[in-house]
Image (cartoon, rainbow, N blue to C red; front, side, top):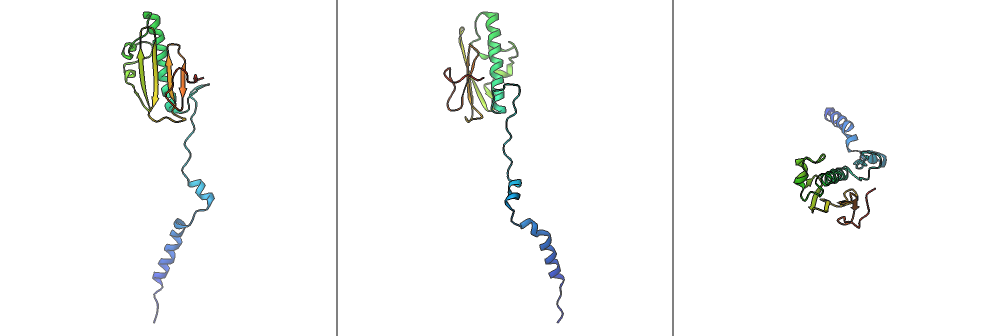
Length: 155
């Protein structure tokens, strides 16, 4: 009785083609195919104190509000008591009145002689610190709790 070798040939060919797909990876292969590490933050300017792009955006927003408040105070001899009052002062726009700032929420409390601006992250961690500023223009940051006037000043 003669045996048909064609199915054995096909099976051998298939194993030869697909075996590498099922082969166990070596540790060197595993390190190359593992999930890449999260990219590190690239500073936006020399001396940038941000730890992430989200922080950079939050700090930029705070700087715009602080500058607008300074200009508003020079022009009217008092601070704006609401964010809508700052619209068209400096580079503060109508869109900036919205407190939802990406990964952060802005909070503003104003009086004629003072104001407090805070930026609270949706999830606080080392790359999403909370921020605090008042009429002195200094921005304070804290990675563990909501920032206040006792928190370290951002350099």
